[in-house]
Each structure stands twice: as structure tokens, then as C-alpha cells.
Length: 344
Image 1 (cartoon, rainbow, N blue to C red):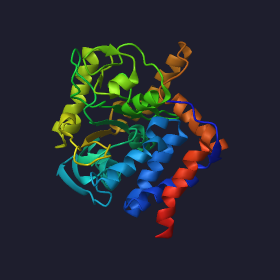
Image 2: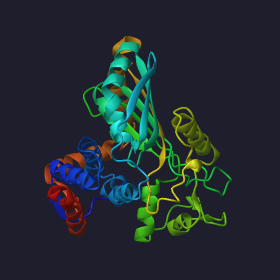
Image 3: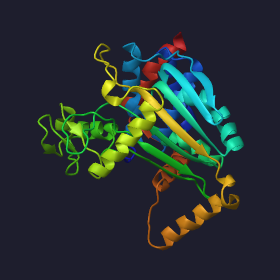
């Protein structure tokens, strides 16, 4: 997570609407454009800059190339007592999740837990916006998604896995939910691209170059190299688990199968996503949220200065109070892209 840029400030509502218009101008269905616009605005508002408006050019290039269908209508099918399967039909993952959210929530309340498997979908954002609403409603939620092949397995040199993030969200009595969202690679692909753009140096063992040599140069990693899993073989095992849950189990493509070579400019991965939603009130007297709050209080009393999600919620408070900071040139660019929607 990077510090927001200095510049002009606009409200969250203004940014979400502006981004909705950008997506509409690119041919995305209006309802889906609103979902994607709000998602990107959330990331920008909360300081997840590598997954906010930084991603808009990639979204638009993928749409222009014909790689992703911005007008796809997802098909939701209940395939078990507590199992939903969604065919995103080569559309974006967030509208597919939105189409299933109400039924998924009810199934989790009825059965105590429910699983959502999304296939043939493009997820190009952070995962925490997918899980946070469930935690706000009192559920525990876990989400995993497969991505582009840009990570080499431990001791390997060829990119075969995605950054394969995991998000976890849990309710906390009297406070914000506990949420973490982290890649199973040393850093996300978005942060890698930002580091390359800014000429930054990465930590040691972040990746390998095209010859398989360890490198801290983000440009060498992007130029035919690969990111590495965090924690060596342990991180690689978790990345493999995500690949199985998000691709093999859902019916989506594996990261190494994603091939948009015939769609110049495309960036979004066409893979799969899995969510598990648990009703904690079914266990141990229904006091899980209170016990989680007690645990977090113990950690803070023991000297933990920052827990997962703290910085994001603090940035959200600042953005809600002061507005979301945008570089003026980028704001003008967004408005120019949105103008096509307003004039059509």
C-alpha cells in the first residue's frame, strides 16, 4: 500500500461515478460499470493504489482488445446444499459475485457455511473489497483467486503460478472487521509494475531475471523474469493451494493456461475465484466476534502497533474527511475517457 499522491481531491461518490462513466464509455453494461467503478474507487480511497485507478488503463485495453466481455451476464447455479457455481461467461468477477451475493449470504445463514465458485472470470482488483461486506454482516469470509503466470515456484525460474492472493475477513465486536489481503508472492504484480515505473529497488529474493538469477530489479523481473513466492517453499505450497481452489475446483483456467497473445494490450487474467462464507454464530455460543475483539485487544496490549486492515481504515477515514487525492493529469484523463459515455 502506497501513500496517496498530492493533488486535487474529490469525494468517493464523485470518483465512483466518474469511473462508472469510464467503464460505460468502454462498452460495459451500466450496472456492471457501477460495480467496477465503486470497486476501483474503494481501492483508491483506502490507499490500495496498485489496485485503484492505476488499473484503469489495463481494464480499458483488455476491453478494447476483445479479451474480456464487458456485457456478459453471469449465470448462477446452485450445485449443492451450500454450494453455488457461477459462470462469469468471460466477464469481470465482481459482477459475478454481485449476482450471487444475496443467495450466498442466505445459504450461509441457513447451512452455517457456503461456498461460491466463480469460473471464466477476470479479477483485476484487490480481494478485500470482496470479503469486507460479509464481515460487516457478521460472517467470516475467505477468498482466493488465480491470476496470470508471473510467479516461479520455489527453486524454479519459469513463471507458472499467479500471485494467487488470499483475503480473510472476520467480524470484530465494537470495531472494524479484521481483514487481510495478501499475495502469495513477494509482492503483487501491481506493486511490481509501480516499482518499475518509479525506478525503485525491491527486497532481496523478490524475483528472478530471464536467466533465472535472483534480482531486486523490478524491470528485470518484468522483462522475461518472474516473481518468487514469499517464504520459499512454504509460500509456494500456499500458492499451489490457491491455484487448486481458484482454478481446478472452480473450472477456471490455470495461470499457465492464460494466453492473450492474440489480444494485444489485454492485461486481465481469465481464471477463477473461490469464496467461503462462514456464519460464526453457529459455533461456540455465537460469541466469536467478541472473542476476536478480545484476541486483538491482547495483541495490542502486547505491543502490536498495527493489525491487518488498520492502515486501510485510517486512510479511509482521511479520504472521507478530506477527499481522495488524485494527480491532476490523471483526473483530466479520467474525465476525458468518461466524456464519451456522457455524450453517447
